[in-house]
Amino acid sequence: MKDYQNKVNKLDKDIECDVLIIGGGITGLTTAYHLMNKNLKVVIVEKNQIGCGATSKSTAKITYLQELIYSKLKDKALPYLKYQLQAINILKYIIEKENIDCDLEQVESFVYDNNKENLIKEKEILESFKIKVNMNENSISVNDTYVFHPIKYLLKLKEILLKNNIEIYEKTNVIKIHDLVYTDKYKIKAKKIILACHYPFFLFPLLIPIHCYLERSYLCSVKNVTNKKISSITSKIPTISIRYYKDNLIYLNGSHKITDNYNENKNFNNLIKEASIYGDIEYIWSNHDIITTDHLPIIGKLKNNLLIGTGYNTWGMTNGTIAGKILSDIILYDKEYELFSPKRNLIFRINNINNLLSTSKTLIENKLIPNKKWNSKNVIFTKINNDNVGIYIDKDNKKHIVYNKCPHLKCNLLFNDVELTWDCPCHGSRFDIDGNCIMGPSCYNITYKKQ
Ligand SMILES: Cc1cc2nc3c(=O)[nH]c(=O)nc-3n(C[C@H](O)[C@H](O)[C@H](O)COP(=O)(O)OP(=O)(O)OC[C@H]3O[C@@H](n4cnc5c(N)ncnc54)[C@H](O)[C@@H]3O)c2cc1C
Image (cartoon, rainbow, N blue to C red; front, top):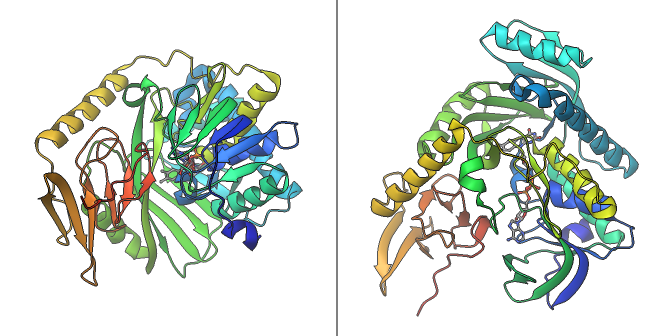
């Protein structure tokens, strides 16, 4: 497996293919898995490395008990549940068939809510679909759910895909889609294109911020704890979510709309304070996902040759897996899937207006008064040759200079002192200390180039 993990193959020429998958997370790789050995030339392009996106930073619970989603979905609850159960079966099938060592473990998953009536309602809905649900003091739980190690899973999938003639190009960034797909240097001609890149940045005027928004959460891993073989989540804000990995507790505390409450230091401090009760913190990180206003993912055909899988509402292990099945079925059999269709009438509700208002407010505020009060003491903002730059001075006194504007919509960036990244408070792009883009929507780096 090591050879495949280490092998990073960059695109070095113009190419043609039947199916181009943009993004090497759970959506992209699962789609490619279903398209293997079907007489199609399938290519995956990944701007960083396989498995380094949102999938790798999730808590990786594989569960259909997802907060109180079935009460929210009403008449869509049963079809949604069926897809979640199917996704769990697909994941288990792939792991077993391919003998993937990814620490899959069955655990009881819990949802906590202080309001008993909410729990009873969710339980009754699930029981009407013949699901056995346990009622506890202030939680409900189900037993047939899992956790796993998502990076181990994706790296093994990468190995399987390469062995089965799927071409994978890493460090290959798509910057534009017209008739052809353009990377930084080369062109790709594809009969079908699948956007598996998490944030659908190439298109969709008004999908974000009207029908979707980004939600950021803060996580850490606490070492040397007793594994209780459970996972749990609260149904209301502040979100607290936990799972175990061997003798580590993965603890998530605090989620917010990316445009609200963008105070990384405060949010991380709060996380550290809460998690320290359980033991010594070993790792700490943040992650964000795309939330849809109707609670359903967006999976399917945008145009004849353009497909998408996104908007998993923080449940991407199941929804990314089912996206792989749906997207490959559309390619292979031209099947229609109504429930998650991007063309569905994403209900225009008050939430949508709120999203638009809060994103616009942050955007305007950011442009008028670039808020630097949360930035590290080790960061200087200045101008070099009329360019606004941010300079991070590391512990060895080395200066790392970047342009202090997100290439996406020119928002001013904030420095995230904990993860040492430059983060866009408007749309979630992230850059490392040297300005390399590690998360979209930006397609470009912000590395300062001396004139
Ligand atoms: C804090 C948190 C906890 C979560 N916990 C869970 C959980 O317990 N269970 C669960 O089911 N889900 C969970 N999720 C949700 C889940 O992590 C995501 O929904 C899922 O990983 C998204 O998968 P993806 O394949 O769409 O995106 P990604 O994994 O981000 O993959 C997309 C890939 O596309 C690449 N890319 C982007 N732009 C380009 C470009 N221009 N050119 C080439 N490549 C590009 C990226 O580099 C990335 O590797 C959680 C999410 C968060 C934020």
